[in-house]
Image: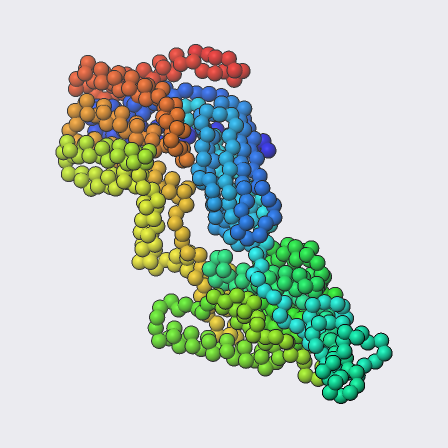
Length: 422
Length: 216
């Protein structure tokens, strides 16, 4: 892309001129003629420097090797600058945002006596999101280095998907769909898990005969298997709060956990969907397949959006929250609005599990009795919150920093059904 | 290597007038020496500057950016919950390359100003002053080098500075001759002569016209 540029005295030339003028002024003020020997070389250097033509535009292009990637995957960034006239230097300075790290290539690269220059770097995104790489400051200096111009270039935007942690689809809703899947249901069917023994009926397969029971009872008995059923999973992300060190905030943890859970359930043929709370209420109905993971990941990229509006779950269509779907909420349990959503879902009969993504306690400004007392009150408040949720039949899973999500979720095997519901 | 040479040039620039009795401007000399060292190690200089700024902010009671949570505060959304979760926020990392460049060039400018003050106050003879002038030019040229120069590229860039250096040597010779020819004269006369020489050069030097033709 061609950009019109304006040429201005280079920083080095301005410095030479300023120091020379200061020396001249000092010579005049003090009457010390010898100070002219400080100014003369500087002025002569400015005058004697060769001059060249200054073109009106510069052609800049910035490209990235990929427009979509996962966290910590490497991307190659290439910036090319082309000028109509011979330049003394074309220099590139890469200024990376905090969410990227430089893998190879020096941040500053320079080419001498050229019309076209190219610089390349390998960068690694450390945090998910939709971001541009840059800016890259491109400075072209004319012959003699007295005149220069600068332009900025960005590459992207790059969609960086959250890297899902390894997790197995352990949580099973009390009611499963009437679709073949990987989870053991309560009904009898053509599964793998043993579900009981009954008398032989015409049409049963001989391989199902339980010879031990048959020999004991003197009548043919066959094994029954539990049906393998599929499940619907809806993950909810609490985006009302986003606290913690950059790259490891509660929202980052929630998004990664949700991505891991969605990937695990989609791998086993279940359906997965997502609802984001906070900012704009957005949802994606459950669907199977690997494409659904990428649809969910793209939707999650826009989740950082501040709002004071309480989400209205009534707006969510039935297809996005199908009856019987297992709802897993990733939340730091700080905002009351997310707690309200959870209890509302439970009252509607949805099996709900909450994953607590707050991994650090508040740090007081100073170690004092009052701050210690405040911390204890805060801990008691959170314990009371968790007790209230668990009393309502909503298991709360803690996900500490040093524990895998799979191990944390192993503490809950089956989500309790609502009282009075089958 | 280039940074070390720049720092060494800065140190010599400051030490020479100090050695010729700067009439008590030792504080200026100390500032100049420290800034000369910063031109050689700009990352450390930038880190020291940030530390000093943080200390001054702390003493003045101005909250640093690092203590402000990057996200939204949950307390406003849940007033009935006694929650005071303070985030660690963004920790100040090491200064980036652009910050170090700015510190380096700023320190170099301070060195040049300190040299002018010390030379004005000292009793350097004209030969030493001429040497100081050429060394100051070398120091400022090295200070203004583009970031990312290394090895053969650095040598090629230095070769491109040759016309400027030759012009500086010629100008120094002219001024020396002018001062020697008329001892004790007013600096106005020497300045006038220098300006006349420069104007003559600018008029006589060939230039490229807007249509690509050469004039001069």
